[in-house]
Image (cartoon, rainbow, N blue to C red; front, side, top):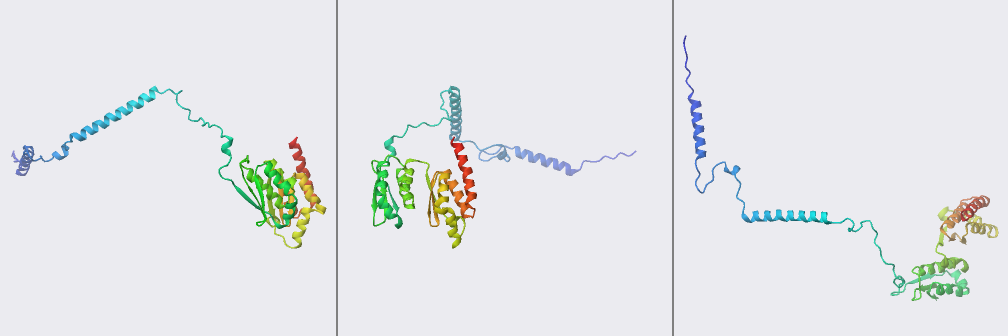
Length: 284
């Protein structure tokens, strides 16, 4: 029986010796001015004392702030806190502050030529309510053919100037003075104006027949619409002006539009009877 003894290879032994030498070199103490290899990953640069003190002070301030917040949350009484949803209360505005006494406002209402003669006849009835009821100053500018009104120290209401302008404008459009005065006494009256061509484009005889259907024989249809809707209507050629409350103006305008579109007067009368009966029931 033959025994074979295998000697260890020299390559493995030399490799181990080299590794030991490398490890010993790494373990050698470094010189005072140099850093050992591999120490960059293990150790960080030293922190200066100023940075450390600033960080410590910031931590202390944060702790104090949290402590103050805790004290506020603990010591606060919910009954003493102001209500968030409560509406702010303001004292009423005095009557003197509502008047614009610093600067007077002026309005100029032009008067058409065909209304100059009625204006001269009813001038006393026009400037009387403006000065007595609203406390406005009124004058007639003959050169400009316009009525000028402005506020004064006797004006009591803020909207007095607008009311006076609507009153003079309604007279200029053709309404009677007694009907136009209602604009000064009531707050829910308005003026509405439109033309026949806004509803339907008509020319020649068709336009004349539409105007005739609105007026009726001797103005019968117009008076019927006025009485049923409690409004006042002015037919000025192709323009139609209505004076009344918002709901009543709508009723009168619907009836006039039906006549312009060609509905017979009898059908319009029947609709007005139904509307007037409903208005009486609502009034009761």
